[in-house]
Amino acid sequence: MDLTSKQRAQLRGLANGIDTIVHIGKDGIGENLTRQANDALEARELIKCRVLENSMLTSREAAEELARATRSEVVQVIGTKFVLYRPSHNKEKKDKIVLVSDRKRK
Image (cartoon, rainbow, N blue to C red; front, side, top):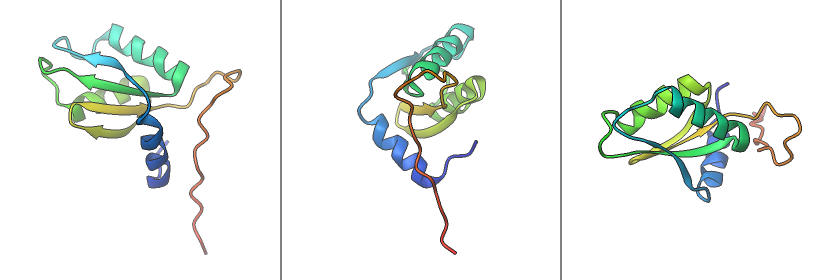
């Protein structure tokens, strides 16, 4: 699933109000961190992550690696923080994020 620029902009706006819940440190991205990110994505669909100073990964590297491991999309990378998005598979979730459609004019 590739996000359009309008959808990315919408998700960036939504990410402004959320707190950082995943921290990547010197251990990098392991099984526990991937599981934590997966659980958070399933519950919230949009998560903000932070790469700590003692990490061996850059923010971009960490974002791409974690996105690959969790099958999510990188929305944005700024400084030491990045935002990931993945639609929830839970059909009973009430407050799902509805992405704008990107219709092209003919």
